[in-house]
Image 1 (tube, helix red, strand yellow):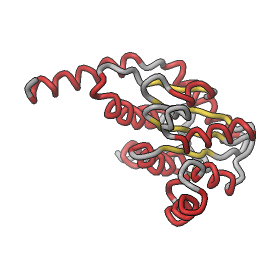
Image 2 (cartoon, one colour):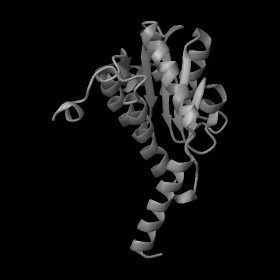
Image 3 (cartoon, helix red, strand yellow):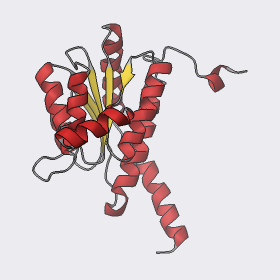
Image 4 (cartoon, helix red, strand yellow):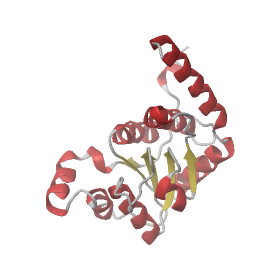
Length: 201
């Protein structure tokens, strides 16, 4: 396959995935987050790798644009590395959430390519966060790839990014995590504050 053929194929896949995302599920996440804000709940984003980068970016957007108190365990490097060192990676995020007193009324938002799978030891730290959310009665939403993994099994609302070809699963899952959360944070039912370039004439 030539470079141009790959580029064309990739961009065609982007169009197919965008057309395949269920707007009703997106709106379900918007409604959950609107209720979280109305009830003075907090929003916790979790992800690893690219998902951790998305989590940090999303914390900014949802605090600034949607007016939701938001956090991510991966943003506090000192605490995270201390917990990894003392407790292990698998429980590190969940223990940060325990330290933040995750509770009913809060929402856990997952960015993950596979959604977590304990049997395959994939994103076990995210699975532990999901188990904690269930235990305390927090809502769970997510944008995940492949079959959605454990996130899709337990989420109150979840977007699964369709797999088109095996060699682009991660790339498309991570790019559409950003697409979907930007859609959500700018949604008229959730957006609270104007963004600079939209309000500048």
